[in-house]
Length: 96
Image (cartoon, rainbow, N blue to C red; front, side, top):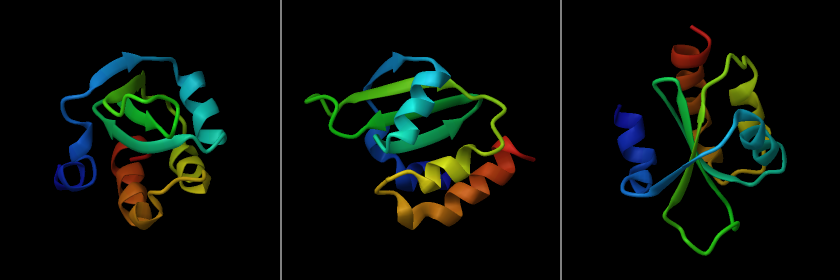
């Protein structure tokens, strides 16, 4: 909970658009993901430079993808300083 409060405060009060997991993974592989939050079976993410409206967040369902965090970490993402937190999140939420 503290992690979400510290890392993703800018995701509060944004417009949420539903999308599918495949679209999310395409954006991950293309290095377009700006922020990611995995919470209660859902993945919330924002996309770098795709819109002028900075208040748009996309949402998809969390899938049983054991390599998700590694793919996020390997993507060209500005969140490199949060690697240890993402691994911890992976161990607690995705791969218990």
